[in-house]
Image (cartoon, rainbow, N blue to C red; front, side):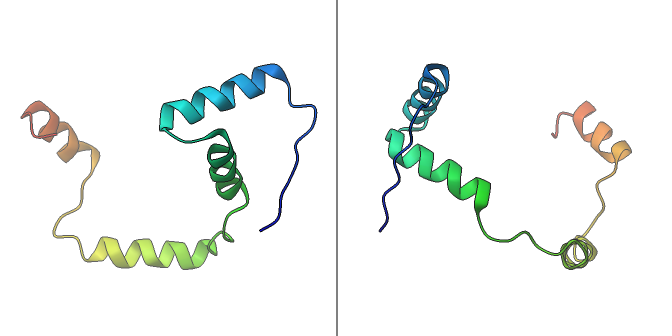
Length: 79
């Protein structure tokens, strides 16, 4: 595995990274790796392919959740 050295990290950024790491139970190194993976992770799906996947999954749902049914569920305490 390769190593990377970060230089001139602003104190405020370092403190925020450290706090985020502590908050998630990670080391600072693991936190930075997770953030980098999120930022430059796998290529994003083609929008049309993603839209087709969404439509396919949605068509298999037994019902459609819309604003009215969601409001009704909230009012009935089912949300």
